[in-house]
Length: 315
Ligand code: NAP
Ligand code: 8YV
Image (cartoon, rainbow, N blue to C red; front, side, top):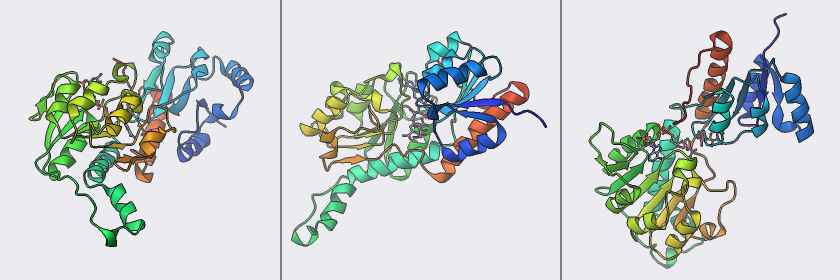
């Protein structure tokens, strides 16, 4: 019988993918062990285990203590859970799951835009609470002719732009450098906010974007502005967002991601002009299955001939 490659699974990122990996590899479910058991297990794997699978947004730092580790195959595109100083130091390659989730995340961004502009949450409560017979709901905002600023016109941002054009929105964007496209480019986030009616964040997380959306950004977006976040919560100064909403310096916010998930500031929960989703950007059966397939494909390819399907290269 052929021996199976050992594989560490760092966390419980997607049970169906983990089940499939269990069937192919000699897996260790690291997250089920206590600290002492983890250290003992990693010591026993030293020299013979070269790969791990993990969520992209969080991993177990003990992984970096396994000297023989060569690869972390991540489930998710945003790799802010990975310590790239450690992977560089230890010569560990990292893969993620780009492209396969673009449609699902862009759909959520558009859904949040419409939900905020047309006040879906307040309107739903208006019907359920029996207020309809007693008076009209305050009016919403039209999208046609407005400007959507996209912070991060990458793979997902481009899908958001493609969908937004169908709603007759004009597109503007901010990246570190302009792209070869017809959309208006803004060098800074505040300039983008100033030029936009709605701004959607699709930037990666991590130190480079930490709290980029601050009080001055919300001031630039203005009292009629709508802020949407499907990127990462840590990119937003959440206290500044709360203040901007409370002081009516912006009109509404639609959020899929938060600074300290799964905790959501109570002030946001209390506001009816804020739409809150529990980080469901990629949460469709089809998309999560495609992400899992990419995790498996990277591992299979690496074990086969040391090549990778979707290696992530840190800046
Ligand atoms: P991508 O293709 O790499 O696009 C990222 C864009 O952001 C690029 O256009 C890049 O352009 C720009 N950018 C990167 N760093 C920047 C910075 N410091 N300042 C300004 N612009 C910057 O990534 P993607 O696949 O679209 O994914 C984007 C992010 O979405 C992920 O990293 C993840 O955090 C988030 N996400 C969320 C969900 C969810 O469930 N809500 C799901 C998937 C992904 P330049 O290089 O020119 O700056
Ligand atoms: C997560 C994501 O993987 O890919 C990303 O960067 O944020 C998501 O797709 C997902 O939320 C799993 O919880």
